[in-house]
Length: 523
Ligand code: FCB
Image (tube, rainbow, N blue to C red; front, side, top):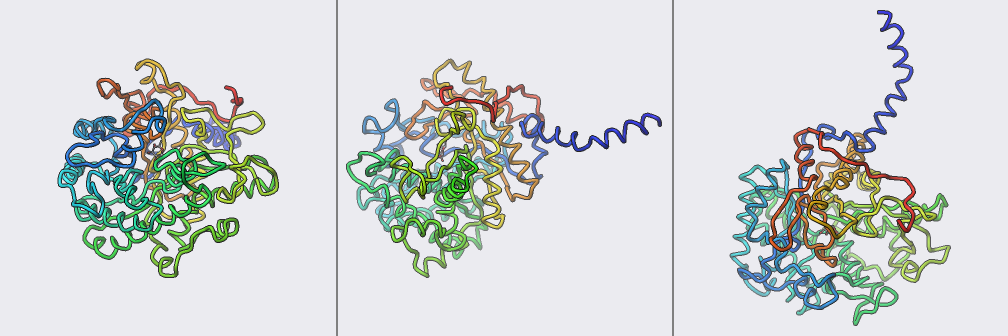
C-alpha cells in the first residue's frame, strides 16, 4: 500500500519521460514488431523480371531494350548483363518456396513484355510467355501468397525502340495498352493488384536526361550523347507514360473490373528532400523538387493536370493534356506505390548560383546533395546518392497523405545495399546493417501509420541479389546471397530476421546504424 502510494504517483509524474524514452527506443528500430502494424497490413518481397529471370532468348522471348543496351561496352558496369541473371526462369519453383518460407503475405514481381509480346503489337502473343506467368501465379496462389504484378518495369521489346523510338512517340501508348490488356485477359482472374508502370519519374530521367538507362539519350550540360534533349525529352516520355496509364486504367475499369475486381496503381521513385538550410528559399526549393519529381506524375493522375509549379517554371515546354485526356487521367489510381530508399538536401538555384545541371528549368532550379557543412545526411550505402535516413519514409508518407487526401499507399520497395562491394560470402551474409535499416525504416513507417497515414503494405527490395541495372551485379540488395558461379541461393541473416519478424519474434541480433552523427564527406 505504502509502495503504491509513493511509487505510483512518482512514476505518473515522470510519465512524459517514460513515454519519450519508449518513443526513442522505437525510433531506433530496436523493438519493431509485426504487431506494431495494423492486422490487415501486408508484408512482402519485391523483384522485377529483367533483374532476375535470365533466359533472355528462350522460349520465344525477343531481345529487349536492356539486352541490347548491355551489348555495348561501357553501358553496364563490369560488362554485366541480364542474360542469365538469377536464372529465375528455370528456378522459379525454388524461389517461390523461398518466398513462402519467409512467411510473407505478398510477392511483387513484374512481367517481361518481350516474353509475352516479343514484337509488341506487331506480332502474336507468345504462348510460352503466358505459360510461364500462369505457372508463377498458380504457384503463388496455391501457397497463399498474393501476387502484386508490375506490368512494365523498365524493359520492353527492342522492336518498339527501333520502329518508332518507344516512349518518345505517342504510338508507345497504344503498344502499352495492348500489352496491359493481354495481361488482364490472361492473368486478371488471379491478380487483384496491378501496377501499371514502375517509376516513370526515375526512368524518364535516367534514360532521357542523364543517359544511364537505354536508350541513353541526353544533351549538354547533362552529358555528351549522340542524340537527345535533356531539357525536353523526359517531359515527353512522362507525358506518354501518363496517357498510357490513363488509357489502360479506363479500359480495365470499363471491361475487366466488373469480373476481375482488381485495383490499379502506379509506382514512383519517392526520394525524400529536406531543405539544405532553414532559409525560406531552400524550404521552397525542397517543396519545388517534390513537385517536379513526385507530383509530376501523381497530380495528373489524381487532379488531371501537372502541378502549377512545373507550369510556372517550364512554361510551354511542359506538354498539355487536352480536356478529354484530363478527364480520363484524373482519378486513375486506386493506390500509390511508394519506392523509398533515401533522403537528400535541396538547395535553391533561383536566387543563388548552382552547377550547370542544377541551374535548369527541368530541375525546377534546385540542386541536391547528401551533405550539409561537411556532414552527411546519413550513413552511406552501396549507392552514393542513397543515404540511410529512416525518418524520410515517414516524411514521405506524410507528404503523400496530405497532398493526395490519404489515398491508399503501399511501400512497394524499401531496401539496403551494402557499401562494401567486395568480400567473402561469410561477410555478405552477416548483413546486420540491412536488418537495422529495415527495423529503423519500419519504425518510422509504423509511427506514420499511427499518425493516420493510409499505408497498406511494405515490400522489401529485394528477395535475392540481382541485376541492378547500369550497376550490374556489384551492388547487392538481397535477403538471399547469390553465388555468381553456381547461382546457389544462400539466406543472409536478414532473411532469418524477416522470417522472425513476420512471426512477431524480434530476437535476431543486430548492430545499430548511426543516424544524425558526423559522417564527413570523406568517411
Ligand atoms: C529502383 C528500381 C528497382 C531497383 C531499386 C534498387 O529504382 O525500381 O528495380 O533496382 O531501384
